[in-house]
Length: 607
Ligand code: G6P
Image (tube, rainbow, N blue to C red; front, side, top):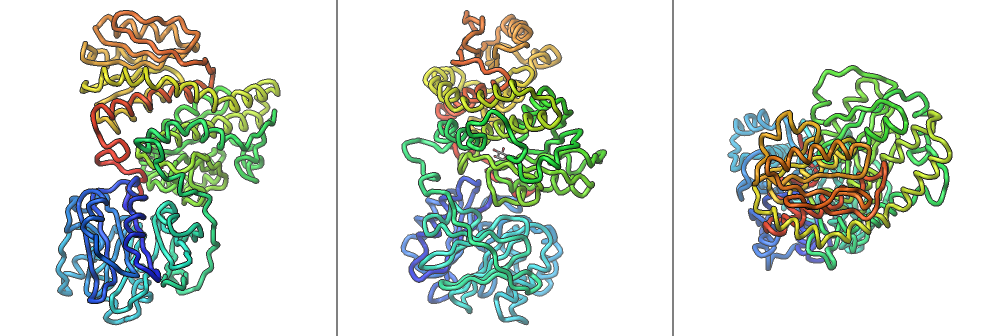
């Protein structure tokens, strides 16, 4: 959600800004813009729509210092006058986040004669910096005093044509990192934007303010104390964020799942036993007297949590609750200092999940674990224990490989907690670890079903609605399948535990309602078969994902696809793959923007 790129270098930086914005497109945006320090003052170019349009509008521009932005509309519609950068006097600013006190700032600045030309909260920052520069002409000092007045979340980058060659950046709540290059210095919302120029990254902390020139970087705290932040050499390769032979990032990421799982599970190696230490050095001690697990997450990550609940209660015998982070943070709940609070997030910067984690800690619940794909993210830094999924960069807005790697991590958690409580026999332990190690191969086999799934997708891509059914640990997989379909194909989809059919959704079933059923060969299959009969009796067309050894057979109006292997407790990890492929191919038929679906963002960094 919103992306920032800033560059101060010895040569023309316009193409660096544009390429950087393209790498941030996945975060979600609806307009883009840049501001350059040109000979005659600030040159600003803004465009609604794609970065490609900004690129065309900015062709021919040249500068050594500049800032750029992709905007995901919050305050004010997606329109050119609301696009960043915002300019006031000699300065231009880009901003990611939400300024909560912008209305009072707007009133104050209007009274001073500033005329607002946008509906954004960001424009108040621009005018406030300009007003402050009148008494404090140094840009760094002026931005610092403005930051002290901002309430809310921000990452900002500011340039001033009276002070050429300088960029001042600051962060509180929203992500921002610096890139140290040979020919210049850079800042961006995430590392992928800067791999084109450097691998040397410095992650800013909340409350940091920094100045970049082509040859220098200095960082201070908002109170003026100088700080040194470590330089991380990014392990991301530029190729990891390239599309390669694939048509879409989502397709690439679906097919990367065997490798993503293998990388995530590398931590267990060839061992026959599992150690608590894979969740952090303090894990054994911290997990020792855990009596409950509370999982906090949003979107797809909440579905991995819901699946894990079945594993944790069954394998470890510990009660587990899963809460949508945006609900938990505002609900009056009963704190339990012995419970383990698990925050699951691909990005590690989802505003609601981070706030829910902080809320849980504020209630005295300090046993915290982050399951996350981004090691330097806020959620990881603010948790005591951590498990970093090694899915690699996930660019497609609809999460796929992050989900399956989260599931692998959560299964490991169930095993560790079970072992700590003496609930895991050495035989079971070794068997589960073997199954995990075989997962990449099993997932690879499921991916070979793609051609048949594509045929199914064509059959129902013209439908307006779809119903997904699952039972037990596959109910969250049905939820995830429905979420995928609505996210990228815009077909309205709902998921139900199949036993709930007669309590409402059966009323919707007719010949126009495809019903997709996750039907593995587990203890609930016979029950599920009866539920499917109920659908068929009402004319509903069934698309059933079964296991190799199941007795389900195709008949008129009942289509059956068999997964190559029956995978026991870990079966949700396999059964979600065909649902990902189904929605991907339905979206292809419908011609939607698969990787950047309308109105959605990859990292939801605002409430
Ligand atoms: C957004 C994304 C989803 C994601 C959710 C939670 O809505 O579009 O794909 O599941 O945020 O994100 P997180 O990074 O916390 O897993």
